[in-house]
Image (cartoon, rainbow, N blue to C red):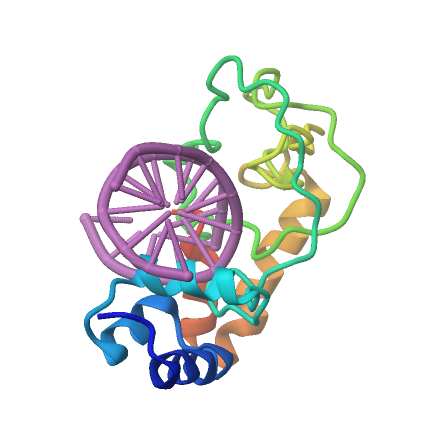
Amino acid sequence: MGWTDERVENLKKLWQDGLSASQIAKQLGGVTRNAVIGKVHRLGLSGRATPSKPARPVFKAPRPQRAVAQPAAPRRIAEPLVAQAPVPAPVRYIDEAPGSATVLTLGAHMCKWPIGDPSTDGFTFCGRRQDDGPYCAEHARVAYQPAQAKKRSGPNELARSLRRYI
DNA sequence: CCCTGATTCGC
DNA sequence: GCGAATCAGG
């Protein structure tokens, strides 16, 4: 099947309506999504609000070296005898200065409050003297307070917030 | 593994 | 011009 004027017109409409290439291909019939994408490019209409990765105009971070595998996410450290508080993880990242410890230097008695984005190199832990649970006094306050405060808003929100840590 | 668009390149 | 193969991502 070729690109008749009618089909091209249809393609333009559907594409600008925000349908994905595969959806358009399915609807037009007789073409694959690759064909649709190829045609779209040849027609010169490429930019569009894509539902898939509309994310950000951020720059492609130059990923120089991924020499050695970075240690994975911080493993939760078991806290056997803490019965009262079920070791809730910090509900969200908070903007603050990098901690003194890294994944490699985080010691047994150091505050394990994560600071920054675990997927990037700037990731640290607070590293101050551990006080309450796995955290220093200040972070323990922040860590445990939301869990109680949010009780009222229902478990779902909390569960959602915690999911990424499990 | 599902999906997204982008690019390449032989046809 | 066409689109499969491939790539780079979410």
